[in-house]
Image (cartoon, rainbow, N blue to C red; front, side, top):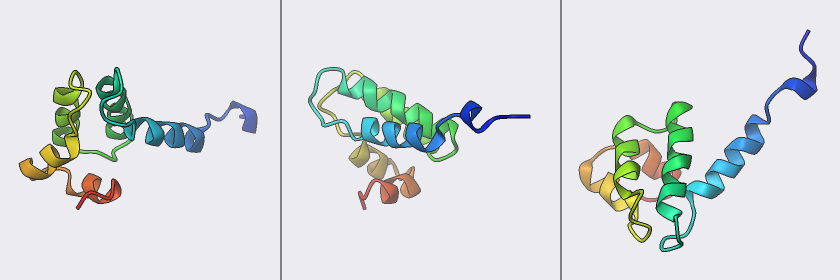
Amino acid sequence: MTDETDKPDVDGETTEQWELINTPLGEKWSGRTRYAAAMFFYKHGEMSAEALEVYRICARLDSENPLPIIRDRGVGQDWLRRMGFE
């Protein structure tokens, strides 16, 4: 039988990843931080592979906002809505 304390803190993890995906542009390593968080959302079925690819491309570009690129490519519309970028 599984004890409640053995369950992963899914809500806490999601909250943490949400904060990371919103790391301010221009901070050192922020592109990589956003990409790592994007991988979390992709693995949980909340982001398309095409949107994840944009985050990968932007990973080394700390000042580059991936959201306009996602919009311009016409991928990840659900993700853009979730991020409040329409």
